[in-house]
Length: 87
Image (cartoon, rainbow, N blue to C red; front, side):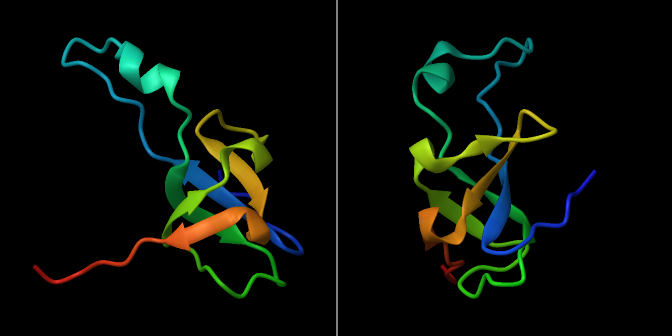
């Protein structure tokens, strides 16, 4: 399910938690909040990011959504967009 964002909101699917081969969530991945993810939906007022961008955002500005791995933030909370570089 994807929700259409409105105004200056950005829906972000968080990067996966680190899980062992046996399916156990590793403690190190729980201690630090997840602040990187992929944009799933942007509101009509958003100009700096687009769907599919991998972004870094301010952790304390996020709100939970319909899915524990998706958060919503205002565009101003997006701190940067990762760029793919040819290596």
